[in-house]
Length: 354
Ligand SMILES: Nc1ncnc2c1ncn2[C@@H]1O[C@H](COP(=O)(O)OP(=O)(O)OP(=O)(O)O)[C@@H](O)[C@H]1O
Image (cartoon, rainbow, N blue to C red):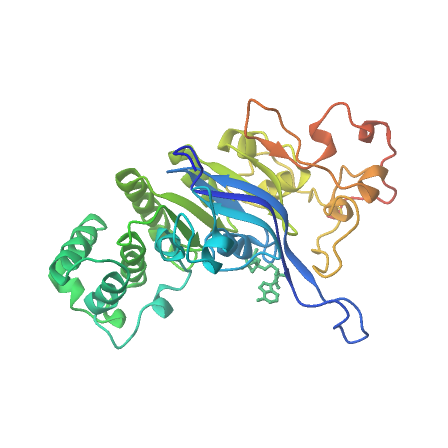
């Protein structure tokens, strides 16, 4: 292990649900929620994971923090294989430390807090259980964090029950609960989606401030490309675009929002009102329906909906194209000039859907 190891490194990670031959007619009901994904998350890095509902964002996020076991592939925390740490007592980094270092914030903060406990109790119990700190040190840490997320006067907020907090205050409380463990990475799974629009920016700014203070990495799951842009632009992070279990394009804000190469990213941008600037009404997709996840298309998984698809896209799965001097990757033949794609026929019946 070296100091340069990413906080999380995922290699060739696949997660499947269901079993072969268990459908009503003996057919396969296996969903490949995550399909051969490679992803590194560096110290202090912010990565926004975007894509349509059901594309695998939550499953990938939970797998990254060790909540979900992969079907195949490896996930390392600072060089330590998480699966091995879970199953062995002799790991270089014990599983308990990995669990403490990788935290999650959910969409619904209300359900994450015990309605019968005052805020201070909900925070003290896990902190005492997972650290060697005494009661007064725990309280000191919690109060300092409450102060920094603006839950003041702190004493007043700490003595309230969850129903006496607004949605934004509940989400701040859940953020304190994650941050008090001194985590290296927080998975924020649609963490601002349930908040009023006016509070979303405030919450994102708060996460970025905490990241500055503690150098915490964030994996931010969202279906909203404009939130992803806001967070990654302010933090110099990356946006990863998922489609049917795969990261089809990943790069900086400039690469993904200003100059997307993958036709799916272009469609997502088209579908995001405050990102779409040109006066173009026609949908860039050939088909609107997401394919059945148990029957993932052959070749490029996006080809049945892709306006740029050619015959090779029906048969061959694109690899992640990019160069050695950049972390940008794009799983589309159009990202590389030399591919036979350019000499193939456009697919028949490519009328655009209006
Ligand atoms: N525990 C499970 N058992 C069976 N299938 C699952 C399970 N969890 C997720 N899936 C399936 O895996 C696929 C990916 O789901 P996932 O929740 O990761 O997507 P998502 O992009 O986070 O969606 P959303 O934005 O709606 O939360 C979906 O087809 C989903 O139905």
